[in-house]
Length: 251
Length: 321
Image 1 (cartoon, rainbow over the protein chains, first blue to last red):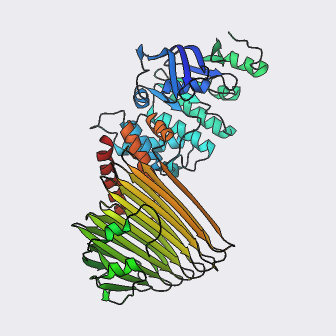
Image 2 (image 1 turned 30 degrees about the vertical axis):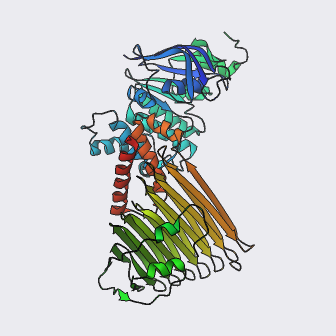
Image 3 (image 1 turned 180 degrees about the vertical axis):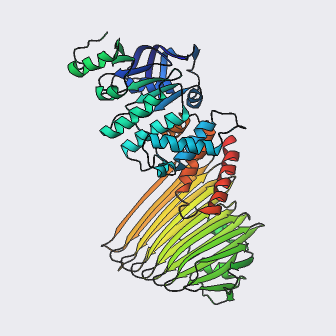
């Protein structure tokens, strides 16, 4: 079992040092085998939390720690955090011309392997074909440039394709359901559910209970004002759907 | 007269003497004839001194013509009306300096894919290419500028006939202490002509790369369109890049536009690639390759692989410093 621990995390935006902290004391422990959901009103720091865990250089940790299995990752650059087991399914994935999807995913897999032992090309292509079929993606998407000209839904599906191919220990998914129609939502959820198991954990940001009908979380957190104010089981999400966030006070 | 644009020291380069080299044409059945050509300006006249001019007539039934040259030279290529042909030029050089003049005449209704694989390694290279595009003809021109020389390239397209169309892509890689400038010009002369310029350059080390883009719609070229995009990416603190778009519009009923950027590698793209575990240097190489790829759109197959391998090698050298 692996554990991701967030301890008293305080975060600022680097470019805006005078702006108050976006996160002001987040505590969270996620073990592999668990799926956590984070809900909460807009602008409460949910994305900031996931971006900071991943190591986005735009954010600055002013206090607290992030650890994997007791080892702080705060001083690791983004790529080393990724190789340590983190994955961030982004809200707005970048488009990169000139690099095909397949080439990129293969490079990402090989970055985790010894230099003299890359994944054999045939095993890679078979795995890619199979995963794309699972996600009901047309095969030509493997040869298209990375996210270039993809629709919003295609980009989200492509994030899940990368997730399934890379097989990280901790998947941070930032509004992976936004902009998806109901069929795409079902497919994306299927992908995440296939990843579930004792070696996989996920932290899912969503605004809608609907996603959590498909990916049933073990734990639900509510974030407001830069920290977690309530934690419960899946029933908490259902409750919030009825009552909203208004009545939840600052903890 | 020299084009009156900033920052390319034309005169400095044309003080040296040029050396013409051997030119080979495939298929061998295509005769390389000695010909006549009257220089149209000071630069052409200079390029024609001591360089005999050769002429090739490309008939309508040929699909592929390959021209290879070592050193410089002067060449006129006449493409017959209605031809659908790819003309591939491979140039390389060593030594002190060279001058290259190529005039490409595209006949009416012809469709020409024109690819320049420029690998000039002489200390100085002066390149002047002029394409004259006839009525209803289409020119898709891609220049891979992988020179190590100092110097400049003039890429001039004259859209002479009505409905003539041209796209000119330039993908250039500048490294070392190289100082190189491209002036890419499209002149809309015929009515309803369409000309697009797309220049992409990557600069490492302490190299300096200049892209001048000139779109000129002359009076009477009604219904014409002229667009250009000039982008350079600087990879090191010592790298210098310039992108100078210039639109000269002498007719009212036209559309024209330009975009230019001089930038460093996009931090968001790097972050995205690195978030998947790619080390920074590898992520940088991917972003850069992708950027340059947009200037090499017409090139595929073996040449594409060669060029990409060259980009990798240059970047590996440049980025590790």
